Amino acid sequence: MPEKLRILVVDDEPNILDVISMALRFQGFEVGTAATGQEALAGVRSFKPHLMLLDIMLPDMEGFEVAQRLGAERAELPIVFLTARDTTEDKVRGLTMGGDDYVTKPFSLEELVARIRAILRRVGLDGNESSRIVFDDLELDDDTREVTRAGRHIELTDTEYRLLRYLMRNPRRVLTRAQLLDHVWSYDFGGDARVLETYISYLRKKVDGGGPPLIHTVRGVGYSLRLPRS
Amino acid sequence: MPEKLRILVVDDEPNILDVISMALRFQGFEVGTAATGQEALAGVRSFKPHLMLLDIMLPDMEGFEVAQRLGAERAELPIVFLTARDTTEDKVRGLTMGGDDYVTKPFSLEELVARIRAILRRVGLDGNESSRIVFDDLELDDDTREVTRAGRHIELTDTEYRLLRYLMRNPRRVLTRAQLLDHVWSYDFGGDARVLETYISYLRKKVDGGGPPLIHTVRGVGYSLRLPRS
DNA sequence: CGGAATCCTGGGAAGTTCCTGAGAGGCTGC
DNA sequence: GCAGCCTCTCAGGAACTTCCCAGGATTCCG
Image 1 (cartoon, rainbow over the protein chains, first blue to last red):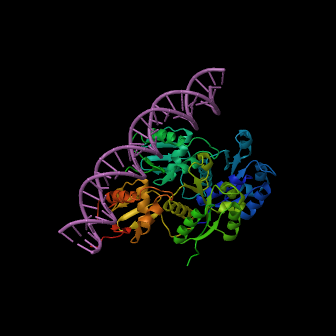
Image 2: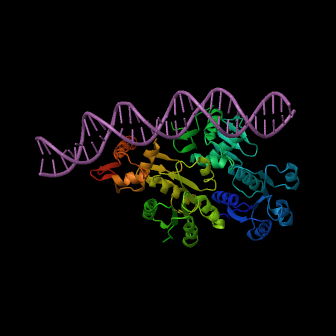
Image 3: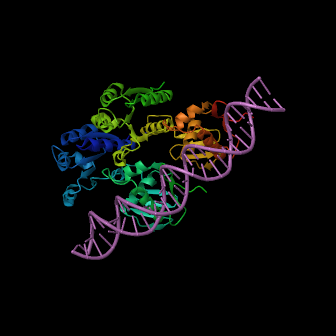
C-alpha cells in the first residue's frame, strides 16, 4: 500500500479545524493539526506534511510569517492559504510561491478539496489522479473548468459547476440532500435548503438537455449521477 | 478475533437509550451509554468509542456543544447526531460536512444501523464489510441503493427498500411481524400493523416477479427470506 | 367438510416531496 | 452608476408514497 499523503491543517478556530480534518481524513489523507504559528512550525518538522493548509489569521503571527520562517523547507512544501474575504488580493499574490494557492473563507469543502488535489497533482504527488473526470459521455476538466457532453461544450455558472463536480466525483452513489448542501455550498450557508432543487433543475436543463438523463432523483433521499435504466 | 467496535450512545430518554443499545449490541457492537453531556464527555475519554451517537437535545447542553468540547479527540471521532424532526434545517446543516451524519427522530432502527455502518465503512473501520448484500441472485448495494434480481434492475420506494434490506441482512431467519415493524418503521409508528402485509405484497410483486419466490410467509409468525424448498 | 383465523391484494385518500418558472437582490466589470 | 449575470427565495402544481380499507383467497383445525 502506498504511503498516505500527509496534510497539516493550521487554523485557530476549533470548529473549522475539526470539520476540515474529518473531511480530509475521509478523502484518504493523513491529517495533522495546529492552532498557532508556533505549533505549525513544529508540526512541519515533526509531521513532515506533503502539503499545508494555513490560515492567514493566527493568534501569534500571520500565516505569511509562518511560511517565511520555514526557511529551506519552504521550497519543498506547497501551501494552500485560507484567507478572509476582504484580504486584498495583491497581498496574497505577492507572498504565494509558484506551487501555492489560496481559498477565501467561507469556502465549500468541495472547492477546498479540489484545490488541494490540483496542487498535489501539479507537484506530482497525487500520482494516478487526473484533472479529468469522465462519466459516460459527460466530461469535466478541473484545470480548464471545461465541461462537455458528447463533445458539445456546456457553459456552467460557478455553483452549477461545483455541484456537477461533486456528483461526478461520486458517480452512481446516492448523495443525500445534506451531503450535497454541506459539500457544495459554503459552510456558513444558512438559507433555504430548496436552492438545491433549483440548481439540480438548472443542471438538468444544461447537462441532460442533449442526451439521456444522468441526474436522477432518489425520492426522500437525494440525488444520484448514473446511467438511465432502460 | 478482531476487537469489537465500540459505540457510545448518548440520549436522555431511557427508552430510546435501551432500544438503541439492544439493537446495536445485537449487531455485534460494544455499547456504552450516557444520558447527559457531561457523562458523554467522560464516556468518550474512558470508553474510547470508535463512533458516537449523540442526541442534540440533552438536559445540560446541546449535542453540538458536546462535540465542540471534545477538542482534539473530536477530529478522530465520527458522530451520528440524533435530531428532532422540527430542528430547523440550518441548525442541522453542516453536520455532514466532515463526514458525520445525522438521523432525524423518529427513525427506524434499520436506518440508524445502516447509517452507522456506512460511516464506519468510510472511515475504514468496518473492515471486511462491503456495501453490497447478496442473497442468491438478489443483490443490493447500499451506496447506490441499487437492487437487482438476476441482473435485472428493480425500482423500489424508500420503505420497500428498507424492508428488503432488513430481510437481506437476516437471510433465512424468520422475522416476526413485530421485529419487522420495529426495525423498518419508526419507533413511534402507531398505525395499523397491516401495512406490513401491504409492503410485503409490493415487494413480492417487484422482487419475486421474475424468478422463484424468495419471500416466504410463516403463518402466525412473520416472514423469511430464503430459497424455495423445491 | 365447515368455520375461524390469517393473509393477500387492488383501490383509493391523504399527505409529502419535488419540479420549475418568475423575480428580488447582490455583486462585478466596465 | 449602470448593465448583466448569478444566487437565492417563493409558490403553485405535478408526481409520488404511504397508509387504510375491504373483499376475497388461503390455511388451519376440529
